[in-house]
Image (cartoon, rainbow, N blue to C red; front, side, top):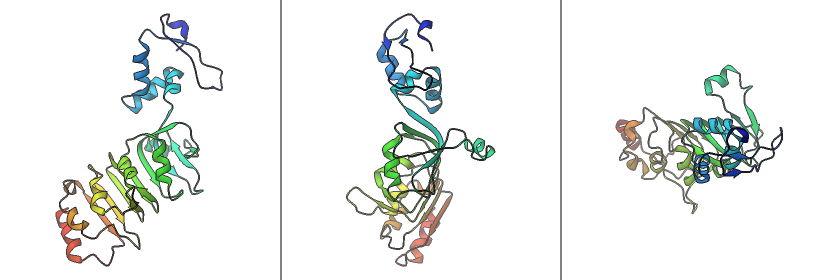
Length: 243
């Protein structure tokens, strides 16, 4: 949007350096407070994409990368992101994906579909969550990571398909999070797969607590792997009967 198209004030100045040159001053026919609110409170990822395409000001005020998926790379340093839908990305054979260093990216990240963390550093989820603007994913898979429970809650609030494979999940004080709390943090999950670690301490009496969870009945597929020897067949059978 060029400044010549609108004649009223106030005027906003660019802060980013753009490859094609500096942005122009913007004269809006609305109050500055309204424009600022629109830029910092997008109602949806689709709306945000439209606003930043209409004017660079919105990206300058609220720099966010909207991606359908984010996948940790085997080099343990970078991630692949894609702004196309999952189906479109498959048709493109992944050529539309872009590699970024998650720890160094300056913009916030808004993920709308899938997060896959099979590789990367042990604290990858903590680094990623510090960069997240919003997380609205349907599918989540995390393997062999150290996960803070606060971060897990952020990642699983909208997830329907969850795979947690041999992770160590703890509270801020370092105490292990029980399996029932992990399931409870995912209110709309319908597919849940969990692999216990070799020295796992997330069970104890948590299996009995699982049977009391309100969202257990919503789970259509429930998989447990590498079950600790401390679990009895009776407790395990009881959970699956309730589910």
